[in-house]
Image 1 (cartoon, rainbow, N blue to C red):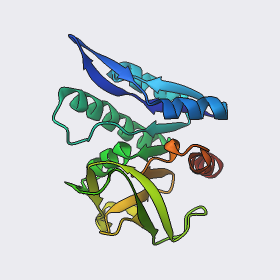
Image 2 (tube, rainbow, N blue to C red; image 1 turned 180 degrees about the vertical axis):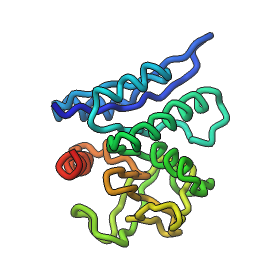
Image 3 (cartoon, rainbow, N blue to C red; image 1 turned 60 degrees about the vertical axis):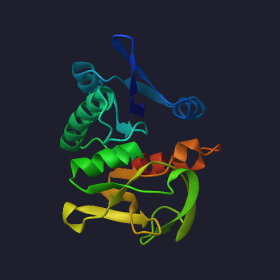
Image 4 (cartoon, helix red, strand yellow; image 1 turned 135 degrees about the horizontal axis):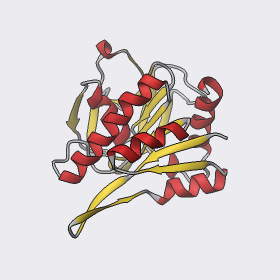
Length: 202
Protein backbone atom coordinates (compact mmCIF):
# COMPACT_ATOMS: atom_id res chain seq x y z
CA UNK A 1 0.00 0.00 0.00
CA UNK A 2 1.30 3.45 -1.01
CA UNK A 3 0.61 5.62 2.02
CA UNK A 4 1.16 9.36 2.13
CA UNK A 5 1.67 11.54 5.18
CA UNK A 6 0.66 15.19 5.00
CA UNK A 7 1.47 17.75 7.67
CA UNK A 8 -1.23 19.90 9.23
CA UNK A 9 -1.70 23.63 9.37
CA UNK A 10 -2.36 25.07 12.81
CA UNK A 11 -4.33 27.95 14.34
CA UNK A 12 -4.98 29.35 17.79
CA UNK A 13 -8.34 28.43 19.34
CA UNK A 14 -9.20 29.88 22.75
CA UNK A 15 -6.45 28.58 25.08
CA UNK A 16 -5.37 25.79 22.75
CA UNK A 17 -4.68 25.00 19.10
CA UNK A 18 -6.44 23.29 16.21
CA UNK A 19 -4.73 21.35 13.43
CA UNK A 20 -6.42 21.45 10.02
CA UNK A 21 -5.86 20.70 6.34
CA UNK A 22 -6.95 22.20 3.01
CA UNK A 23 -9.87 20.30 1.42
CA UNK A 24 -8.14 20.42 -1.96
CA UNK A 25 -5.84 17.72 -0.60
CA UNK A 26 -8.69 15.71 0.90
CA UNK A 27 -10.57 15.82 -2.40
CA UNK A 28 -7.47 14.65 -4.23
CA UNK A 29 -6.80 11.76 -1.84
CA UNK A 30 -10.43 10.62 -1.98
CA UNK A 31 -10.71 10.83 -5.76
CA UNK A 32 -7.38 9.04 -6.24
CA UNK A 33 -8.16 6.42 -3.58
CA UNK A 34 -4.91 7.20 -1.75
CA UNK A 35 -4.46 6.18 1.86
CA UNK A 36 -3.14 9.12 3.83
CA UNK A 37 -2.24 10.16 7.37
CA UNK A 38 -2.76 13.65 8.75
CA UNK A 39 0.40 14.38 10.69
CA UNK A 40 -0.28 16.55 13.77
CA UNK A 41 1.77 19.39 15.15
CA UNK A 42 2.91 17.31 18.11
CA UNK A 43 6.48 16.05 18.38
CA UNK A 44 6.00 12.38 19.36
CA UNK A 45 2.91 11.77 17.24
CA UNK A 46 4.40 13.36 14.14
CA UNK A 47 7.62 11.34 14.31
CA UNK A 48 5.70 8.12 14.97
CA UNK A 49 3.63 8.71 11.82
CA UNK A 50 6.75 8.53 9.65
CA UNK A 51 6.91 4.78 10.28
CA UNK A 52 3.66 4.35 8.31
CA UNK A 53 4.29 6.41 5.18
CA UNK A 54 6.19 6.26 1.89
CA UNK A 55 5.98 9.96 1.03
CA UNK A 56 5.78 13.14 3.13
CA UNK A 57 3.87 16.15 1.80
CA UNK A 58 4.47 19.54 3.40
CA UNK A 59 1.64 21.71 2.04
CA UNK A 60 0.91 25.42 2.02
CA UNK A 61 -0.21 27.69 4.84
CA UNK A 62 1.09 30.76 6.68
CA UNK A 63 4.43 32.24 5.68
CA UNK A 64 7.43 30.51 7.27
CA UNK A 65 8.69 33.92 8.42
CA UNK A 66 5.48 34.61 10.33
CA UNK A 67 6.27 35.45 13.96
CA UNK A 68 3.05 33.96 15.37
CA UNK A 69 3.54 31.15 17.85
CA UNK A 70 1.47 28.86 15.63
CA UNK A 71 3.95 29.30 12.78
CA UNK A 72 6.87 28.61 15.11
CA UNK A 73 5.22 25.40 16.33
CA UNK A 74 4.61 24.18 12.79
CA UNK A 75 8.10 25.18 11.62
CA UNK A 76 9.73 23.24 14.45
CA UNK A 77 7.69 20.10 13.79
CA UNK A 78 8.24 20.14 10.04
CA UNK A 79 11.95 20.93 10.32
CA UNK A 80 12.33 17.88 12.54
CA UNK A 81 10.39 15.75 10.04
CA UNK A 82 12.59 16.98 7.19
CA UNK A 83 15.74 15.86 9.00
CA UNK A 84 14.31 12.41 9.71
CA UNK A 85 12.96 11.94 6.18
CA UNK A 86 16.30 12.84 4.62
CA UNK A 87 18.04 10.38 6.93
CA UNK A 88 15.53 7.60 6.19
CA UNK A 89 15.33 8.50 2.48
CA UNK A 90 11.59 9.11 2.64
CA UNK A 91 10.78 11.42 -0.31
CA UNK A 92 9.43 14.88 0.47
CA UNK A 93 7.04 16.92 -1.66
CA UNK A 94 6.95 20.54 -0.50
CA UNK A 95 4.24 22.83 -1.85
CA UNK A 96 4.52 26.64 -1.55
CA UNK A 97 5.13 27.03 2.18
CA UNK A 98 6.70 23.56 2.17
CA UNK A 99 9.17 24.70 -0.49
CA UNK A 100 9.97 27.84 1.51
CA UNK A 101 10.52 25.82 4.66
CA UNK A 102 12.98 23.51 2.92
CA UNK A 103 14.70 26.56 1.45
CA UNK A 104 15.02 27.89 4.99
CA UNK A 105 16.37 24.51 6.10
CA UNK A 106 19.04 24.77 3.37
CA UNK A 107 19.73 28.40 4.36
CA UNK A 108 18.55 29.95 1.11
CA UNK A 109 17.54 33.60 1.05
CA UNK A 110 13.77 34.13 1.31
CA UNK A 111 12.52 37.67 0.64
CA UNK A 112 9.16 39.38 0.36
CA UNK A 113 7.99 39.79 -3.22
CA UNK A 114 5.09 41.46 -5.04
CA UNK A 115 2.77 40.02 -7.65
CA UNK A 116 2.66 36.45 -6.34
CA UNK A 117 -0.46 36.44 -4.14
CA UNK A 118 -3.81 35.23 -5.53
CA UNK A 119 -2.76 35.45 -9.15
CA UNK A 120 -1.38 33.50 -12.09
CA UNK A 121 1.98 34.11 -13.73
CA UNK A 122 4.44 32.36 -16.07
CA UNK A 123 7.32 30.21 -14.90
CA UNK A 124 10.25 29.22 -17.09
CA UNK A 125 11.88 25.78 -17.06
CA UNK A 126 15.64 25.70 -17.60
CA UNK A 127 15.71 21.89 -17.47
CA UNK A 128 13.39 19.23 -18.82
CA UNK A 129 11.23 17.70 -16.14
CA UNK A 130 8.28 15.37 -16.68
CA UNK A 131 6.33 16.89 -19.58
CA UNK A 132 6.42 20.54 -18.53
CA UNK A 133 6.84 23.04 -21.35
CA UNK A 134 9.59 25.64 -21.32
CA UNK A 135 6.98 28.19 -20.27
CA UNK A 136 4.01 27.34 -18.05
CA UNK A 137 1.39 29.57 -16.44
CA UNK A 138 0.80 28.62 -12.81
CA UNK A 139 -1.32 29.76 -9.89
CA UNK A 140 0.38 31.67 -7.10
CA UNK A 141 -0.56 32.24 -3.45
CA UNK A 142 2.60 33.36 -1.63
CA UNK A 143 4.17 36.54 -0.31
CA UNK A 144 7.80 35.42 -0.23
CA UNK A 145 10.18 34.23 -2.95
CA UNK A 146 13.29 32.04 -2.91
CA UNK A 147 16.65 33.23 -4.22
CA UNK A 148 18.62 30.31 -5.75
CA UNK A 149 22.01 29.40 -4.31
CA UNK A 150 24.15 26.94 -6.27
CA UNK A 151 26.15 25.97 -3.17
CA UNK A 152 23.27 24.14 -1.51
CA UNK A 153 23.23 20.98 -3.67
CA UNK A 154 19.82 21.85 -5.10
CA UNK A 155 18.84 21.47 -8.75
CA UNK A 156 16.70 24.39 -9.87
CA UNK A 157 14.17 23.54 -12.55
CA UNK A 158 11.89 26.56 -12.92
CA UNK A 159 12.04 30.30 -12.24
CA UNK A 160 9.78 33.33 -12.35
CA UNK A 161 10.56 36.38 -14.49
CA UNK A 162 12.88 37.72 -11.76
CA UNK A 163 14.84 34.45 -11.60
CA UNK A 164 13.40 33.48 -8.22
CA UNK A 165 13.10 29.74 -7.80
CA UNK A 166 9.67 28.25 -8.53
CA UNK A 167 10.64 24.56 -8.57
CA UNK A 168 13.72 22.73 -7.32
CA UNK A 169 14.77 19.25 -6.29
CA UNK A 170 17.15 17.86 -3.70
CA UNK A 171 18.84 14.49 -4.25
CA UNK A 172 16.30 13.78 -7.00
CA UNK A 173 13.65 12.26 -4.73
CA UNK A 174 12.66 15.49 -2.94
CA UNK A 175 10.62 17.96 -5.00
CA UNK A 176 9.65 21.50 -4.04
CA UNK A 177 7.14 23.68 -5.89
CA UNK A 178 6.04 27.25 -5.22
CA UNK A 179 2.65 26.97 -6.93
CA UNK A 180 -0.30 24.71 -6.00
CA UNK A 181 -0.82 21.77 -8.38
CA UNK A 182 -3.40 20.30 -5.99
CA UNK A 183 -5.70 23.26 -6.69
CA UNK A 184 -6.09 22.38 -10.37
CA UNK A 185 -9.54 20.86 -10.85
CA UNK A 186 -8.54 17.73 -12.76
CA UNK A 187 -5.62 16.78 -10.45
CA UNK A 188 -3.55 15.77 -13.50
CA UNK A 189 -0.49 17.75 -12.47
CA UNK A 190 -0.32 16.55 -8.86
CA UNK A 191 -0.98 12.98 -10.04
CA UNK A 192 1.90 13.29 -12.48
CA UNK A 193 4.31 14.48 -9.78
CA UNK A 194 3.35 11.87 -7.19
CA UNK A 195 3.40 9.08 -9.80
CA UNK A 196 6.94 10.17 -10.75
CA UNK A 197 8.11 9.96 -7.12
CA UNK A 198 6.38 6.62 -6.61
CA UNK A 199 7.75 5.08 -9.82
CA UNK A 200 11.31 6.36 -9.51
CA UNK A 201 12.05 6.17 -5.79
CA UNK A 202 9.66 3.74 -4.07
